[in-house]
Length: 427
Image 1 (cartoon, rainbow, N blue to C red):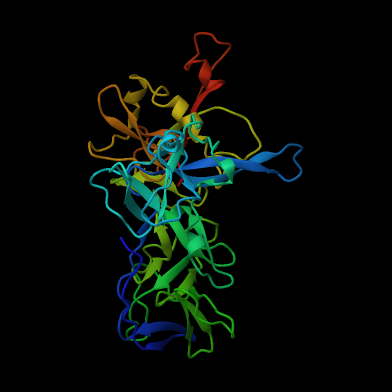
Image 2: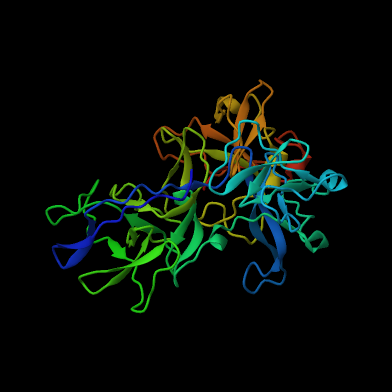
């Protein structure tokens, strides 16, 4: 879908709400704003390590920073080539294309706002991101490798950075918002912004549930603020100047209290998360708000999704906490489906993918011995737990199977170290 929409913006009026609050109405509703998909089928995200930074203040050692990059369906990092200067053409052929493999686009692939398809000199199709053809590097052997970064100063990782193509007002940023499942506009505090659409009638805001008229705060613009890019300024009758994105006034929601919250979703249909790019979610998977963990991945009927991870001890935060350790995708792929045998699957049911499913975004597919494919999120195979009886249950959280003295209690092979445990998965 394209981000370009023909917006018919009408006269903006202000309706007073009891207690002096004001909400915008629009005599002519704007056209629907299309949200761009971050990845087409077959293109995934991976976290790669870049440089070294102090991870924990006061720590005596350094840890690499993590950068989200685009990858192919197997998780290999994608790169762009500085010498690709002509739109629709690749300058990498012959020996170059042997070392730097063009990322093939399927015959039925469709271009989108950010993703285009070029035809190479040999007639094959290749994906391009914002008109830059994409490649993998022969010396990258596993998920997370980025050995091609800055080779000859002309090869660079294709990083997820949608804000690079935007003009943003002061105090507005683009960040990943976990519970909104995408890259979204956030305010100076890093809290999700919402776009307002609809008319206020009878001096009241119609809410889907509960009182909400006092919970939405306008994103104020400075007195000297001017329109830029897709952002305009609305002069309100209460004296506030408010930022609008593509004609939609922007608000923050008081119910969002932690970074990554999107608790305003569904409160009122006229307030929509200000997404710039939407992440892929498989059919039948949704995100359930959870304040302690920053959201949970669940099935459509509310069953929590779990991953089996390797037991380890580090200083990066508890996996049970919001913003805690989410595991290493390479570890998840190493465990693969070996973390749950036939007996295990009597209690832990695999999340089976549809026959025509394709990997995309943080989601990959793992082939099973029965010929089916199982969904994996950030490298970890996903399961539901038979002990969870109602939507939102997380009874399977922190179920440990430890290796004891390498004896008969051993429940995993040597590559799993101290053993395995089950954890909930957060977006």
